[in-house]
Image (spheres, helix red, strand yellow):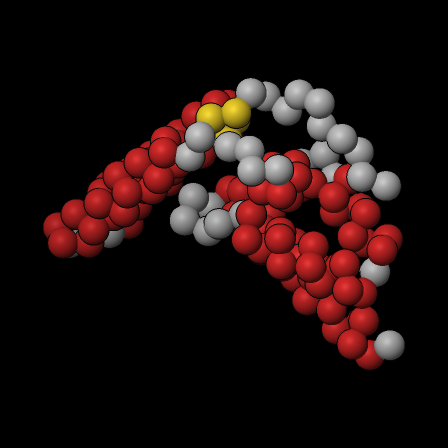
Length: 130
């Protein structure tokens, strides 16, 4: 019983971090949601089914399981958010040139990584998990 509670708490924290990853460009979303699903699978069918059935979060897990890529709309959103946040940091936050160069290189690497992931058609035929 104690282990189940611990796994539910850990899974819930991982879901929270995964949600943050949707909005923070350098924080990955999918790995945290996959770990949360694993915790929930071992501890609570209710939480596991909620996560997989979630309109927004369940999509990440289903796409990963089925080997699908990232939809074009999501790629555009991620790259736009990355450019905005990194641009703000480069202009207003980081004072020295070396730091600005590092941020530009990180942004370029992340953009190329996102572009390299195979595209997928928008979420057609998404199955409900019950």
